[in-house]
Image (cartoon, rainbow over the protein chains, first blue to last red):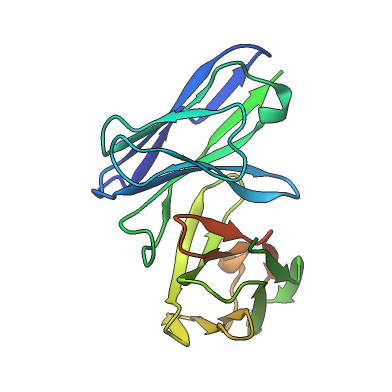
Amino acid sequence: NAGVTQTPKFRVLKTGQSMTLLCAQDMNHEYMYWYRQDPGMGLRLIHYSVGEGTTAKGEVPDGYNVSRLKKQNFLLGLESAAPSQTSVYFCASSYSRAGGEQFFGPGTRLTVL
Amino acid sequence: KQEVTQIPAALSVPEGENLVLNCSFTDSAIYNLQWFRQDPGKGLTSLLLIQSSQREQTSGRLNASLDKSSGRSTLYIAASQPGDSATYLCAVNSGYSTLTFGKGTMLLVSP
């Protein structure tokens, strides 16, 4: 099992450009999450999904959109990138909301110039 | 709103020492608490998961305890090794499909 994988690993964007980050998991987990990690701020939840076709906002959703068309994939989109979105993005998944252990991907390092 | 605090922010110890990392949270209504390890430039590796009904969990040289009523958890690392050097993160699951993270303790174990 690959666990949770993320594509791409690194990306540099110019302000105003758009991109999509892909997260895939092969553990048949229902729940998937997108976090961002910034120095001094820790990890913060952007959006999450409790199942195929569902999405919900987390703590810092502005400027991002998500889609969960297939159970194993969770996409994070930036429609018009801003320098404030320079961060490391982590995807995670778990099999249940209440008691489930979350498993994390290796991260995507995004720089917006 | 749940808040998670980790003390100390950084810790440097010689190899072989036993050490304790602390985590506190403001809202005791939690489902579980998870300890992670993060190496520089890498993702998060889950170390231990403690359900709200449990008092402690052990894995090898690691032991995590949970006192839900007082809003505290500790991660005990026995006989520390240089390979234990990393940032340790505590995260609380308050049951709304989210984890609230502390800012971590950066551990350096010197040979």
